[in-house]
Image (cartoon, rainbow, N blue to C red; front, side, top):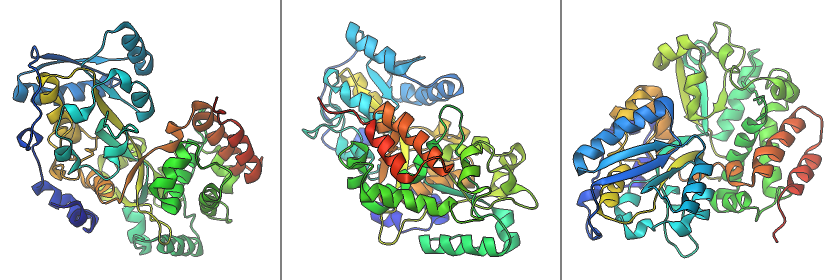
Amino acid sequence: MSSRLVRGLPTLVLALVLTSCGSDPETGPNQIELPAGDKSIEILGSFSGEEATLFEESLADIESRTGVDITYTAAANFNQEIADRIAAGNLPDIALYPEPNLLMAQSGSMAALDDIVNLDVLRDSLVPGMDALAVSTSGKTYGLPIRANIKSVVWYSLKAFAQKGYSVPRTDAEVTALVKKIREDGGTPWCLGVESGSATGWVATDWIEDYVLRIGGALEYGKWARGEVSFDSDLFRQAALKFKSVWDPNGNVAGGGKGAAARSFASVANGMFSSSPDCYLMRQGSFFTGFLPPDVQANIDAEVGVFPLPTTENGTQGVVGRAELAAAFTKDADVQAVLNRLLSDAFGATWARAGGWFSPHITFDGRKYPNEVTRSIAAILYGSQVFVYDASDLMPLEVGGTAFPQSMAAWMAGDISLDEAITQIQATWPVAP
């Protein structure tokens, strides 16, 4: 099935159509010939606890199909451990990187995936943009995703919408009209809280990243994430002011920007599902299922609806998210056999059924997701024009992890102006030597 056809399908239909799709890269043309291994490999990653258990259960299928014994090593501090092991020459066969910058910084110790697997077969079913997350300036691919999550989801209460007769908006203009209608009906449109302890403000950065992508497109988004487009740019200002239109008008958010800056992101949706909702719409990541009230989680398909945050007029309908990327330090037939499965749409059924896992492949069997809400979120990912990695996580830590979120929270609270926030953020960007 072509990606063009998939993107034209309505969300619920798409989830069903996905069940008939599939591919097997092991049978793809022009398989690369590599030296035989010893039928044993090590994978190093950051999955721990229940996630490690689910990953290892998913690996059991690969072991049975390939005959390769796989040892998974969970790193308590992945970034430090992989750096130490590279320095010591004690390399894993495969490593699962939680973000692409570190992967590319260490790619000199890796084997390019171009020389191990058939990239054309794997790329054919990936969400657009996911094949470009870890590519060198010479065009070599060093990492591809095995799992994805996305940020660009708007959540709502099915019962509240039905009670009020509200329709799900499909465009930015329709969102604006719905927000106006909710206010006219005496309700508060947006559930918004950006307080998160020492990480306060990341919710605001996620919102703004979505609008940088929608207004500027993936190319300009990437330049901004790399510092080639500054925070003191028309693009960032437009995105920030678009986000301000969510919380600034009186009545859009409880307590306005100041209230949202002080409100915890974790509990902000609780009142959305009460008999008299205190808000109706929440933009949040796919991970948020675990933060919903227990009774809502227990009956999620009857309680929760989702739709993609619409693009601005003539903008890009993409998604912002994160992904774990597989990279290879060994180049032999064992690694090839494991990567062929690990990187394909055949991987992840066990984890998908448990929840909290999304395949990066539009051809993944949608029946393996545990409920309709998860299938609908997957369809948002698979129906997007492009996937881009969370920009603040790609920026230097002092920028994306500190100045950006903190300045946005202070701006929302009314403590500083947008100009002051921009100056503070841009001043933290490291000066090239």
